[in-house]
Length: 391
Ligand SMILES: Cc1cc2nc3c(=O)[nH]c(=O)nc-3n(C[C@H](O)[C@H](O)[C@H](O)COP(=O)(O)OP(=O)(O)OC[C@H]3O[C@@H](n4cnc5c(N)ncnc54)[C@H](O)[C@@H]3O)c2cc1C
Image (cartoon, rainbow, N blue to C red; front, side, top):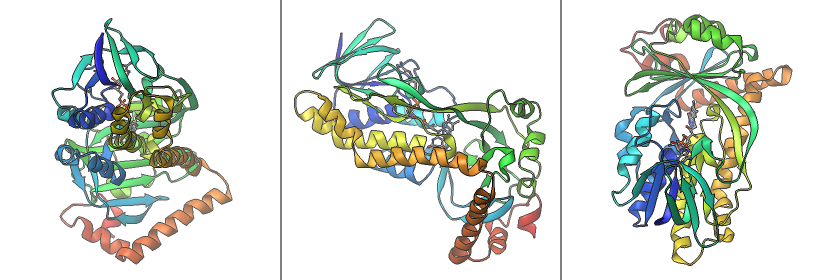
């Protein structure tokens, strides 16, 4: 039996950050994951304001950012037209690079066990984890950070099966007139949430989010002929990018909305996707995972370890944390609403989309002036593919 104060199940985004923070704080920590390093995977590939803010509070931002590529301006297109040029900072970063960067920060005295947790027996004092390699780990606190594979603790409930499908691929960005572009679906019939084009350190990257079933023939057509299928679903896109061609294989990932019910147990706290998933369209899943860990490790764990026991009352403090509740609610509402807004038919939803477009243009005009001028200024050295930036 391996003895530790805190056992962290899962060394993905949330688990690696938790191990780093708690290890740095001098706690006795054991981190468990079947993979020695995070394998390549198509997941969150951008750090936005919320991610950056939480990484800063967690004390790891300066170590993470050198692995990313910064972008300070994003063109936003709605209804097939440029609606806004946003002066905001985002960082493109490959997911496994991000997780492995966090893993490299985990202090050496945090024990790592390369295995899978298969079961947990809980009590108000100590928890016992059973691992696939036959080992057992006894801990005062178990942090469940095992992502969508959660289920060892509590009951997993599916809220929306295949809520959306995410498609990621490399693209040649050398002729883009912008640094980054978010291009919303033009018409509900296309079932597109949005396409985002942005720079990663390795080159141009495209993330396309659609609302389709996995057996939809559209996905088969996309695999067979990505350029033609994208052009058919985003008819006005070429004015910004020219024909959009994939410069590598397509990664296609369906995402379910799911959450764990009955989470209140002594000595166990769930973080990130293990608690609940978000739709990638909302761009909130990773931010939510990071916030869970920051609140848990900065605010609650130090206080819990300072007194005996690990009762349900202690664990409830974390689940009732106001910032966590706000972040969970925002993530869920955005995940559900984005789908309605993209697929909604009829006068009301059409008016809503035009209202958004007009609001974006008005905001842009008030804050920065004419769009056409801005687009011309944005990347003078670049050759626009066609259309707007030249006009
Ligand atoms: C295609 C896609 C695009 C996305 N885009 C965005 C985005 O733009 N913005 C955003 O904020 N979010 C985005 N997300 C969501 C975000 O990536 C996730 O919410 C976040 O990565 C969850 O992190 P996590 O640590 O909870 O899980 P993970 O990083 O998945 O970590 C889980 C870890 O647990 C380990 N594990 C599993 N089972 C066990 C076990 N039994 N024992 C031990 N270890 C185990 C796994 O090996 C893994 O290392 C996207 C997700 C997808 C799928």
